Length: 510
RNA sequence: GGGGCGGUAGCUCAAUGGUAGAGCAUUGCCCUUUUAAGGCAAGGGUUCUGGGUUCGAGUCCCAGCCGCCUCACCA
Image (cartoon, rainbow, N blue to C red; front, side):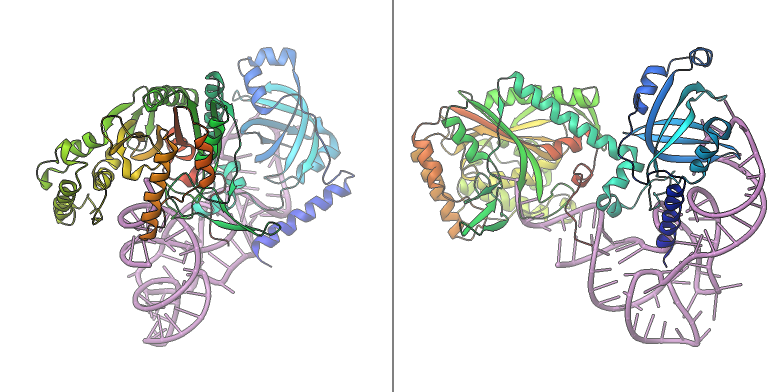
């Protein structure tokens, strides 16, 4: 028998002994008068003398997280919903049967207690138990009480243990919930309604990514898990739902990293009669408001930096390339050279020469695409030189049309679109644009994508006839944006890995 | 997929190629205001798996599995 088994065996025997006391092994309910948090909030300021005079009665419940026996008495800490309260148990107060139960309790067991509040000599607010109620047995030993559960894989696989013994892990998910709540309130206040669109789609559109494929038997239909809700949300705007948002999962069949999980949560929203500059302005407010609600302020410590969400810095993509251009690669490309295929390409070649050399080791080379459309190399250079430098919340705007098949072109620059991405902490956090609403132009864009697909780009977008039909009924001028909830949560909880903000991240099965 | 690091008791971690240890947890005894309670004693190991080198392998070598980091990929 393994040690694990023998420990479990001991505990099963104790559970049987508890049954022998005439108690239910798995009782149905316990009505507490105060949660552990409420006790601290309500009585935390009361003096020992005041408590002794009043002896406030409480019924509490929770998991035993510490046990300190003292002969015919003992102390315990009960943990309930993230808060703790101390319990003082003495034989003459709980009676013979109660003390027999006390002796059969293990760390991790769930119990209730009935008694009155007092302060111990050391001043800790404590429940003086007069009755104990057994609620459920922990048959397997909890991780160590002081260091908690450190093994990263175990923390993800057995998140319930992580949440039980590592308070910071719990804090992350409490903050995540607060983030969602704040965002929903902000959208409601702006007149948005929350909607749900298909997770299973006959065409995986709205983004450039490899999808997961599944199959519906009755319809004998191949289906894709969505990579984005975009095209459905815009159908809703066509239908007169002028302000819609959705918070839900997207699925992308791609790599796993500290910033990528195959399923991740996206907030995506559209507002009619608006454009990308309106959304950039509102994004700053939305991020600042959420950061303040979650962390208490708009300045957020993230890894080695302090992020200031009260500001949203702005640079065009072309300015960003020039701003972060490595000196060793010679003069930065001029604004008019970005967007000119030949000039871009020669800039990229110049950059690649230093990227592969020793002094440019921080830089990685970009793929030189022959016959690239205008702006393609500019976008690649932006990602290579600027993206990870963008620590403070920054909107990069005006993207190449060639990499933005669903965005509306700028009036004065036909090769560039009204699109922005927000970066913070060196990560892409959001992506928004003025929506392309000309069905003829949209068809042309889809066809450009199909052309790329034929040339081997498996992530080029697919032509969606049904979406084009919808657009022919008239999509008002509209702006839309997506914000990565997991990454935003990483920033707000100072988490280095996306797995720390997803309760059950994808792992290889044991 | 490449590179680096790691996998030892339920948990957190030690251990020059020479008898696998500690703390917590567990078990027994003592202890009625402790709080990482304390004291005395005890039990608990396929050192990730499989080969190899060696008189002898947790330790060295090879292969594999798993994880983390990183690069690539991923707008």
